[in-house]
View 1: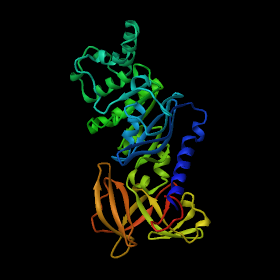
View 2 (view 1 turned 90 degrees about the vertical axis):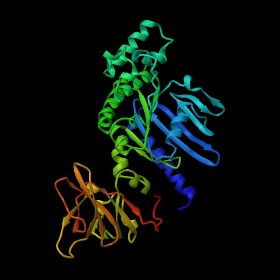
View 3 (view 1 turned 120 degrees about the vertical axis):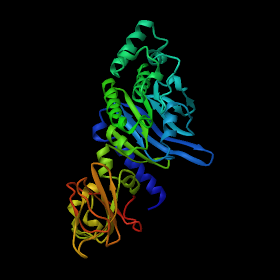
View 4 (view 1 turned 135 degrees about the vertical axis):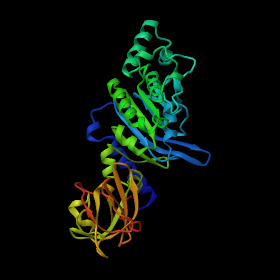
Length: 385
């Protein structure tokens, strides 16, 4: 498959996900169309197109250097695009010779380090973006937001006296005060202790949903993106690899990159023979595989199996499918890395009480209760991956 065909296929997938059935009746609040940004000879964002809908929380997810932060800065007006257009609530803010400054975009931004003003009280921080409102309206708005974020008793406190989670909520309230069309969140939980992150993810989502604000977040944390978002857009090298509901992107990845990036991915190699697939774990029925039809008969494929799709059962002697070569303890579970006799490497998740020894021979059982994704082998060109 040629590079141009691959690009077209990726674009078609993104357009389809942006206009799925659940979004057809919703108003588009944020629209990026063909946005490009380069730094010297490096293209940070390339022909980037995305729609974000009213009341939606969408997360840009990807590794460092994939272009997600550049995209956020383009949306905020901190950078100018080299090409393409950006529209907020139907108004063009960048592109076609037009560029609206950040403070005139009706876009709020929650910085990674919160950027609170230490010389101002909590209440004064929240009121900072509405200093042109009359005093009664300001007081009412500050009181409303501090109550919403659970900090009504801290109006006169200094930001330095607050915990990290409390500072984050003040920053969120300050960004919501002017009632922006769009709220942008830059790695919003990265500065919090691990124990606080889950709590604050739930709290921030609750606040956003109660206010009905449209929000776009960026992060490299897969768990954060999957847990907080209405939709996730996975980025690589300045482009969107896949966009959709978190459970769809996780269970039905459309590229190996997405499969590998979203959690541990084991690939079981096999050959399609009519209605079955012969693999190192035995024969699989094609009914278990997503989108695999008879037109691929004879093809060499790799079936994606997540750790919770597989179980390792100890065997005696040389029986079994392979042996345990690594063991990772996560607290609630063990994840065992199994090297199969076929040469494939897979991961098996077990309850924390299931202790299996390294170098132990095991039989690997497929226990998935859903259809599995598949990809052509690296040397096969069956479809774009």
